[in-house]
Image (cartoon, rainbow, N blue to C red; front, side, top):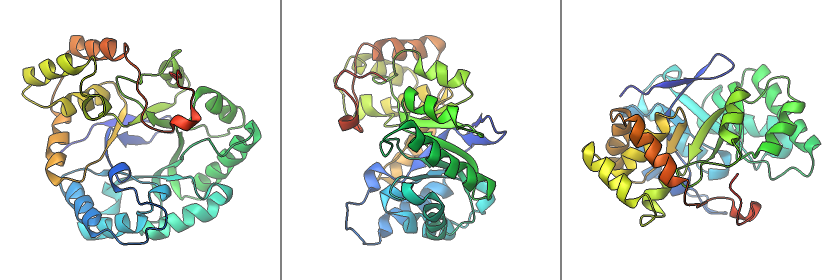
Amino acid sequence: MEIPNLQLRDGNKIPLLAFGTGTAWFKEDGDTSFNHDLVQLIKTAIQKGFIHLDCAEMYENEEEVGVAIKEAGVPREKLFITNKVAQGIDDIHAAVTQSLEKLQTDYFDLYLIHCPFFAESDADLQRAWKAVEEIKIAGKAKSIGVSNYLRPDLEATLRGASDPPVINQIEYHPYLQRADGYVPWMRENNIQVGSFKGLTPAFRVPDGPLKAPLGRIATAHGTTENVVLLAWLVQSDIVAVTTTQKAERLDEYAQALEVKLTPEELQEISDVGATYHFRNSWGVHFADDDRS
């Protein structure tokens, strides 16, 4: 499986399709068990060509990811590993060191601040970003970015940044395309976009306004609605992070790299999706009518 890459502002490239180790595999607080099923699925994903792994300390499963990477037998330089800091935000240097040890690697290809909700002021955002810049200088991350940042968070970060974020990973799908030109604004500032919860229209809102269009487009391409949604992201140059607990889903998701939606199909998904609003994650931090 050949995954296309997206160019980042720092000269590095990121694979446009990633296997996520969160959501389905997220551990509850206090769960110290070792998940052998996750190890096996990550090994299977890597061996099937999912070389981009999206991880986070918050998921509490970094040790499983590290074992899976070691047992998969794929050279480290062939992989692209994203990790995120949240719990260790007060001491990012210690947090990245601990994460590297758990994942049994010397560096991350991409290291993100997982969310901005820790910050009580712009100065807090800027202090955290300076620490992440230092992580990159120390060689512990090749590229650095953020996640779940709204435009004010990014604007504050940019004002104090020497090495600006290369990407913002956000919840993004046809029912949450973001308002006020946020995605174009990020791209104008050389910040690429990553997506999680990209399959929301199929999984969480199956009877939404996209039901008929997705079904028709999937049938036309001899594939599934999930594949169509992932293809919509990839063909829009948005990094698609998806996950599953079922190995057979990996082959399905890989089809997104082969299916080529027409410009008309891409536009229809965007237009119909924009008529409906649905957010999965971090709702407590956003107003009910928020579209950002």
